[in-house]
Image (cartoon, rainbow, N blue to C red):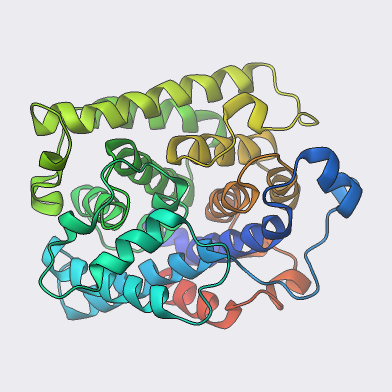
Length: 341
């Protein structure tokens, strides 16, 4: 599939809607084990979207990233200086919003409180020790916005992570998540996805994006920037090995978190979201249900599974009755239509 055909598939709209639907489906099940979820929601293959389909901080912050990208690109060619300001502004708006009551992550709250301070470099606000999934639960817009070079896409993915989550694994997992969305939107077959992601991780293992990240690496204890970022890519490669092992003998009825992790950290959220999608590449709603019925960070796992499924299958993957009642649906569709065009 080429970029010229993406508008027919409406991959951007499918990605954003899928992310939000997964978030809303998994939000009520977060912090529950699988038996408790089944007791509350019934058989996992029959889980229904709540009547009031509220989203968590995952979708809220995805919209922050999407708005920042739109603003930065409206002003000119996307670059680190042009994106940092809008990202910072949108993250602080989210932090101060009265709607920021959807179980937000501590790392995001801490970093955003520091980003409010005028004159503080964003690298000094970044939580260098955190690789929480808040880094990549929100990165999908970077994968679907058109017109970016590979360097711009990687840099933007890592920058949006770095403003809050500065750990090298958070940076690498965010880059890898955006790349997965991009590959699927461009028609990469699900069966070849893991190998493509592994190749990308290996190719980028020693590459530190100085223009986008500045001196962030100096906040850690690494001897060089290449050593710093390499640690993150190595952890991503290890979790891709776990994902590949799970796919060799898949068990759709098993809690996916048992194979690839509970998703509280960035690389495990990526892997478990991918696992749920790859178990059901042609059944996007089933992939969401499997992700939401998991013992870990179910809303983040399901939002990533939804982003992958929507990128691959397009907007038509999602039931109209679900899409019509998702919170922020109008803005999600508007942004998707902008980028699908």
